[in-house]
Length: 402
Ligand SMILES: Cc1ncc(COP(=O)(O)O)c(C=O)c1O
Image 1 (cartoon, rainbow, N blue to C red):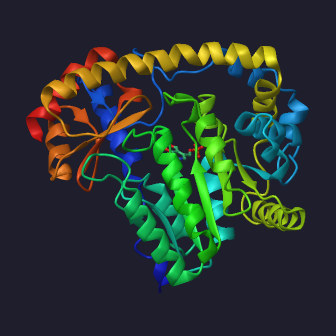
Image 2: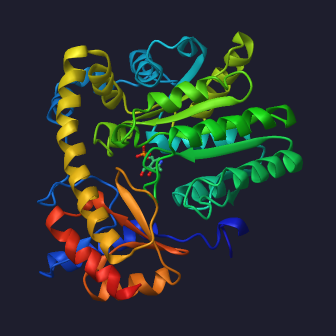
C-alpha cells in the first residue's frame, strides 16, 4: 500500500553535497590525504570550522531564560531592527520594511515562494544556482526556471534575464526572481555596479506588466569585494515599482550556520500593503516553524546592535575574509596559468570551473582523493574549505581531468 502521495514517492533521500562531504570525511578519517572542496562552511587552514570569538561569547552569555522561552512568532524585535539596520543603515527605505525572522536565509527564501507565487507557478533564477532553490520550489509545489547566466564575454546575461522575466510575466501575470550576489553560489560571481544597474532597469521596465518580487539572496554579503551598499542603493530605488526583498542570513555573516538564524526583509512604501505583507509573512512563520531559535536571535541582536561588539566582530571576521582572499588569489594565479574556464572570481566561498563532462570529471577526481561538487557543465570548488597549501594539488588534479 502506498502511503506517500505520488509527487513525493521519488524524492531523493540524501542531499548530494552532504553525501559527498560525508564520503570525503570518512576517507580522510581512514587516513587518506583528501582535499575536500565540497563543504559550504569556512574552515581554517587546519581544517577546523572558523568561528568568531565575540559571537561565540554572545551565544554563551545569553541568559538561559531567554534561550528557553518561545520567541515572538515574527521574531525578536531587536533582532529585526538590527537586521534592517545591517542592510539599509539610515536609508529612508528602512521605514518601508516588513520583516520576519526565519531559520537561516533558507527560511526567508521559502516564505517568498509561498507568498509571492501561486502554487504551480515558476520562480526565475540564473542558470547556475544553489540547488536548494529547486528543492524549495518542489517542496512548495512551485517550479523553477532559469535564464542563461553568462553571455559570450562572461558577463551577466541581462538580455537573457529580460526575455525570461518578460516570458514569466506574460505566462503567469506575476514573477518571482532570486538573484544571489555577491559571491554567487556556486560560481563565485559578484554582479558589478553596472550589471546591477542593468538588472534594475529591466525590472523597472517590466514592472508595468505585473507584480515582480525581486529577492536578493545576500547570504554572502560580508565576503564580497565591493560593499553591499552599492547594490542596496540601486535596488531600493525600485521599491514601490517592484517588491524588493532581502533574504538575510547569520550563517555566513557570523559564521554560525547551526543556530539557524536569518530574516526576510521586504520593502513596500504603502502602509496598508506593507501591513498585509507583514501579516502574511507572520502567518507563514506560524504555519511552518512557528518561531525561530530565541537564544540565537538574542545573541545575534547583541552583536548587530552593540557598536563595540559589532566592531570586534568585524575585526575578527576580517581575519577570515583575508584568509579566504589569499586562497582566492592563489586559485586565480594557478587556475589562470592552467587555462581553466571559470567566471570572474574576486572573493567568496566558491568558484566553478566549466567543463562539459563535470560528473565524469568529479568521479575521476574522487579517485584521486579530491572532492568537488559536479553539476551540468561545471565543477563547484568550495575554496572556503580548502587550505591554501592544498590549492596547487586541487588545481593540478582538476587540470588532469577536464
Ligand atoms: C546561495 C545561498 N543562499 C542561501 C543560503 C542559506 O543558508 P542558511 O539557511 O544557512 O542561511 C546558502 C547557504 O549555503 C546559500 O549558499
